Amino acid sequence: KPISAILCILLFGVAFVAIGQEVPPQPSEESEFSQQLWASFDTSYKLSEKKQIKGDLGYRTIWPASWNKFIVRGGLEVATDGLILKLFKKIKTQENYTYGLGMFYLDSDTGSNSFELRPYQGYRVSFKASDRLAFGQYLRLEERFQFSESKGNSFGMRLRYQVTGVIRPKRHFFREESGVYFPMEAEIFFNIKKTSQFNDVLRLSPGIGYQINYGFRLQAAIAYHYVQDEAGQVAKSNDLIYKFKIYKTLNFDKKNPETKPNEPSGEPDFRKP
Image (cartoon, rainbow, N blue to C red; front, side, top):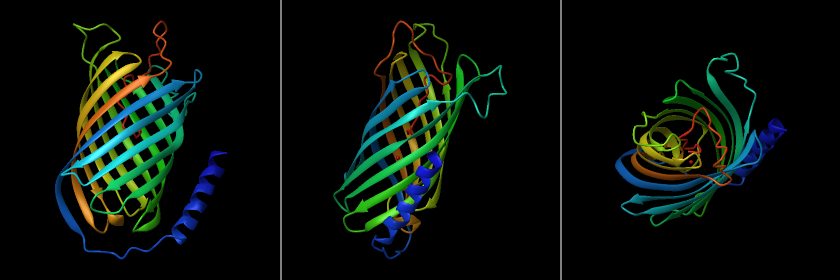
């Protein structure tokens, strides 16, 4: 059961911390803006009318070059009959719960290399305000198991709350299934227990995308991220992120395309580390 699985993960996290190495606190310092590049290939495969597998392969780096990060994630998304917005029958809505696992490898030139396992559980609510405007909310719980060469093991837990919006202008020059759209994302992180690296606080991501068809999209964004490192005691960084994403549905049916209330969703993220 989901609750039993979460309890097992929490108990394992406590034991994980017990065998980890302690890192002495250091003076806090504020960094200037850094610039990073994030690229990912996000894919999905529909299992049934209510279930689909989602995954992504990602690469991230920073300027001036000091680290590279490689990401693999996969999970299951299940549509519900509606728990929150089912009373609003006149509004086209969609609700899903998600769970999965992410793996992150950090190759650092100046610090310590690390590997992170990140199980997650979430609930997404989206609704379509009009044919050109859609909104979504996504609440996700993450458990973070970090293995570091010099800092030892650490366990963290956080809640992520994301609000998304998609604007689709009228198509004067495009077919109905293709065209430009404008995704917007704002995400707040509540670090219940911080880890030794990458404790996000805030993300703001306006962008632009082009939908080739219902199963294939390209998207770019310039985002602002605020991050605390070393369990919030050392570097506090302001990051400017250049994001590029490719979305692909593997078993897309061109004859009977499925249109969702938040299509195109423009999700991170939560996907979206």
